[in-house]
Length: 185
Image 1 (cartoon, rainbow, N blue to C red):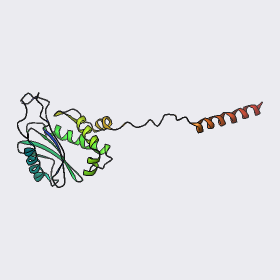
Image 2: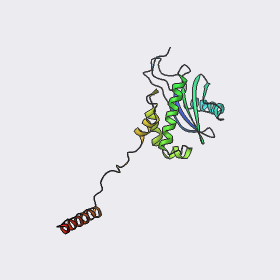
Image 3: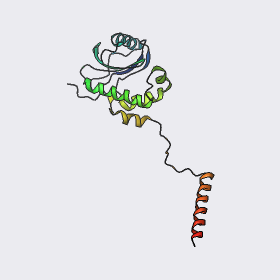
Image 4: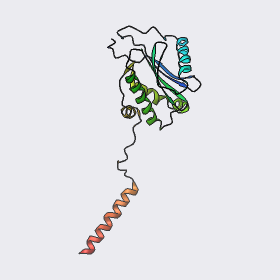
């Protein structure tokens, strides 16, 4: 039984042609079973991604066992997002992490999760990924929390803006009220 927290081996985004848009492979040295021996070279990673795409290019499911890896995937317009983990991991937890990441990405990119939007906002995508998975450990599964940590802070709209126009409006209001009170006497 694996009681470590390391559940994710890789995060991959492929486009509709099977080309890599983003890939992040996790190989923590502090893992209790030592560093992973698979998918070390770029050649191995590309071959794995090519085979994985061939198995998942049609949106027929969302979890498969491929090449002794548990692969959870999600289609989004012209992209496919994958979380890859060892086969003994809890597939529901991995699926929940991918769903949270995907939902947070939809919030951040305003439902424009497509290849162009991901590449233009790669900084947000990577921050979102880092808030979800840290060194192969799932750290957050709430999409709103992930999105709020990643999003750029908005200006406070309740802040009072003082400029010449608002000062003149205040002066006119006070002047009219004083005239009315003097007129009452």
